[in-house]
Length: 116
Image (cartoon, rainbow, N blue to C red; front, top):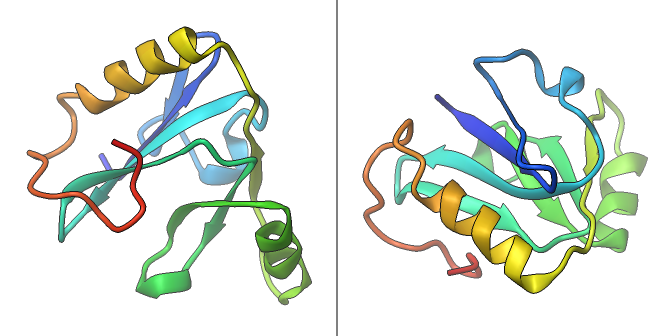
């Protein structure tokens, strides 16, 4: 498992389900990503999630509006998902579920800026 997306309605989509461009695009809450330095890491609490190779590896990245613009003006293939604000308690439940996902390796440390 390389990544899994968690949605507001409780559903998920992962690389085991299909290609990034086939992922449902709305209501994204958390993306869990395998990471060689941390075991796994999350992208959460951002407005947009882009499929990009910034930072040396093709994966999902959480970005704000200007990050989205920056991503879109570069040439090449684009894939964007959209976050949505939900009640804090609902988000916390989804985030806890994502962090307990047994399909990812053991968490070894947190990345800079990673939501805990």
